[in-house]
Length: 480
Ligand code: ADP
Ligand code: ZN
Image (cartoon, rainbow, N blue to C red; front, side):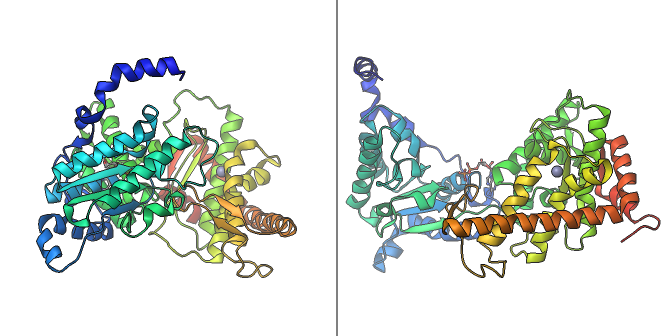
């Protein structure tokens, strides 16, 4: 922005800053309570103390205890951090001030620090109250890092002001600051020092029971048919966040409306999982018959390799209806529960399953296509992790060759070894994937008749259920 324009804008809006923007911050927490937040029991437990303090500060001051001034909610996007902060305000029945870290720095130059000052001034007037700063990493990044982006000074000034404000008030004056981030490791250590955000509450992706609970909370807003089994839906939505689960319920309701119904069925929900996870069904994508057949073999390849290796999860559904996400087919596997530990063998089986699509193309057509690109990426990642992070080779034993930078954002990694070792790692990754690919091909060759039968069945029906798949697989002889 050039200076003249800035003056204009600043001049025009200068009245909007300072006291008059009070309404920007104060928000009703709309009566959100802990009971509205499904699962996340540990986070709620940890925040219950804050609520208790706001209810009864005397109990704490009498004992000479002071509450942490700042609580950092840490976890992936959409897991309910904002909801939890609102619920603390709702439970304690105190005002809720909310602002996103990015708002501080996206405003006009020089406004960040004064916004912070203004926010705290108002909060102190309204105490006891909750101040919630979402995406605190936008202002709270390590001061040394950051380079590249302009407006760095601006961010530093804002951060410094925040630190000054936090130091300037006593823990017992009734202002509790909650902040959320999914990049805890990028925060400036000054922010997490004692007396600032010294309490950290992890807010993780929901497990199976948590997902079921979240689905049920959101399903209260819609009418569901008697056949709906939330346990199954929760199992199918493995890895989904609370926000995604809320979205799954809403998409299912929209689908019912499109069909002229008011009651949401199990089929709506299953379809909606795929919509949310894999993108909308591409109604007008036209695959040639030959392509459709290749995709059918490819998907059956994944499913067969998965099913014939004892440790792989059963198949829920296989479809060759293309998705807008670009996937031409889709094999939905169901984990029988949330697994926190995977054995080396299970990981190898996963890689074999990922290579099963390509292997089926080779076995059936003797030629290969671009259809396996995503499988290749995933198999490579897994194989790499086994070697560099899980210590699953004799050669490198329990030595970390890579370290994870951020456990919440896709787990990107940094190498921690010499160039020579990198060569060895690359070679090991190839060996590992190659061995599993060969295993997958062998499984499919040994079960060629089933492969053909199932691929033809899928080609004709386009979508088949896990039960149909298992029926054909286990019918007659030719079993492994
Ligand atoms: P975050 O702040 O962690 O990104 P939000 O609190 O904004 O996540 O959650 C977004 C939406 O997802 C919420 O409004 C709610 O509809 C849904 N949601 C997320 N987690 C939960 C949960 N544990 N229980 C119920 N709903 C949830
Ligand atoms: Zn595939």
